[in-house]
Structure formats: structure tokens, C-alpha cells
View 1 (tube, rainbow, N blue to C red):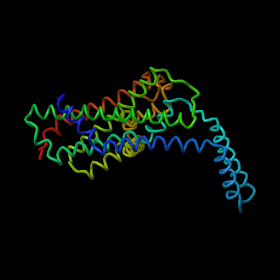
View 2 (view 1 turned 90 degrees about the vertical axis):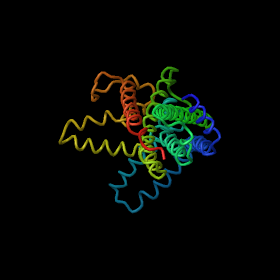
View 3 (view 1 turned 45 degrees about the vertical axis):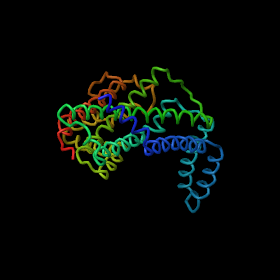
View 4 (view 1 turned 135 degrees about the vertical axis):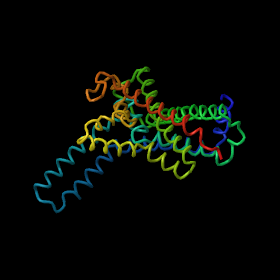
Length: 307
């Protein structure tokens, strides 16, 4: 299995697509920091005040003008609070920069999906011993490779975003401890790995690049998870047990990480295990999802014909 992993690492670092995706990640982190810097500037606040104030009030009766002005004042006050370029914490910044919204999950899953399919499209698997033990080694190594790939993109995004926000002069109100940052990164890695393993299962089941790309976009971005969550919550009004299912889905772990590392010790009475801290819930649901995906891989995907 180690030789297979070494081969995958060698082929990955020689792949232009891998470095293109890495460059895209760095550029987008830099762009996000630059956009945040522009939004935080007094010039942006003045632009909003002038444009919205003039256009929003034109032709409106006095009562509506008062309502529009109140909304504008609230928005301007929020923008003015950003002028100091102070964010809550590094982990909170990471959540907004690349975790929330599924950018990190999409990035890694897309690369993983196309890379895994290339083994079959280019006939690489036909050069490997694919008896029962050979298939076990092959798919076990791919599970490790998926997790390692997500770890690389996570660290790349974390380093690029931290450097970019520092470059634009942002500071932080709260300093995360080394342990808190490590725990947050570990949980983020578990979430993205769970999504990537789900995408990998779909790739091995269908062996189609279009399906792989759509799966990576829909699943890892959280669109499917959000849709299923809302569907289950609505169904839970009629069948209460269905309303408790969303807390067992990987998408629910995002809520635990959004506020940053400081909130990971908080408990939520709505969880099935009411006294479980946020980090425990995130770890439980992501490890459970990954375990289910691994069972599917070794029970079904490895039995599929390699042609």
C-alpha cells in the first residue's frame, strides 16, 4: 500500500492540474482578503452612503424614507465597525474565508474526483494486481490518499488566507490558543474528508467525469446537505423523528466551526447528546459519515469491474 501511495504522491506533484488548483486557492484567498480590505475602507462606506442615500430616497413618501434611512444607518454602522480592520479570530476568519460555503470541500473533492477517475480512464488499474488482496490494498490506499489530499488543501488555504489578511493589515480581537487552532483544523479536515469520500464513492460507482464534477460541486459545496436538512425539518413536523436526523449529517458540523475555536467547547441542548461539546458533535458526525463511506467502498465499490 505504501508503494501505491508513493506513486500517487509522485503523480500528483507532477500533475499540472494539481498546481493549477493550488494556485487558484492561493489567488482566491488573496482576492477574498483584498475584497474584505476594500469593504472595510472608509471610501467604501462613503460610496454606499452616497449611492444608496440618493437613489433609495428618490420618489419615496416620508414614512418609507424614514425606514430606508434607518436600514441605511444600521448598515453604515456595521461597515464603520470594520474600519479598524479587526476580525474576531484567526479561526473565525478561516471559517468565513474557505470553510463556510464549501470552497475548501469543493476544491479538494474536485481534484480527488478527477484524479480517481483517471486511474480507470488511462488504464492505470490494469497494471496492478487486482485480486481480492490487491483490490483491498488499492481502495485502502485511495482512502488514505483522499484524506492526505484534503489535509494539503486545508493547510494551503489556511496559510494563504492568514498571510493574505496579514498583508492587508488585518488584526484579531481574540488570540486562539495553539490547541484551539489545531482542534479547529482537525475538525475542518474531518468534515472535508467526509465529503471527499462521499464524492469518491460516487466516482467509483458511476465512473463518469460529468457525474464526478456535478457531485463534487453539489455535495462538497453543501447544497445537497442544506436541501436535505430543510426537507427533513419540514418532514419532522409530521414525523418528529425525522426532525432529529439533520444533526447526524456532516453538514451540521459546519455550524460548530463557524464561530471559531472559542465556541468548540459549547454545548447545545438540541443535540441528541445534550451535554456533548460542539467539537465532540462535529467529530462524531464526520467520523460516522467517513466510516459509512469506507464500508461502502470496501463492500461494494471494490467489487465493481475494473474495466
